[in-house]
Length: 117
Image (cartoon, rainbow, N blue to C red; front, top):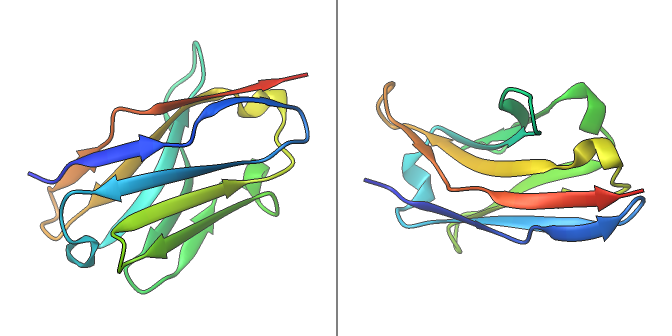
């Protein structure tokens, strides 16, 4: 059972930057893809960005041009660089991984990002 541990959340002013990290206990080469989701108060959890094992990335429209997802396979870590943060980005951010089996889905416990105006 793979474990994902997020870090890097915190309080930042609007316009600031944060980098989230997700360390996997298992070899991330095993996963088909990994990603970051977020859940704001009163809202459903939603995909922010994802990256496949081959390095193809995908972003939710509101973060395009501001957030960058990357993967360091040697370190077993996925990152989310967040720039030009806005108060609407305030949420708990969760790391997610799929695979290798279709039904295999893993979640971290989340890290809180708060953006003040």
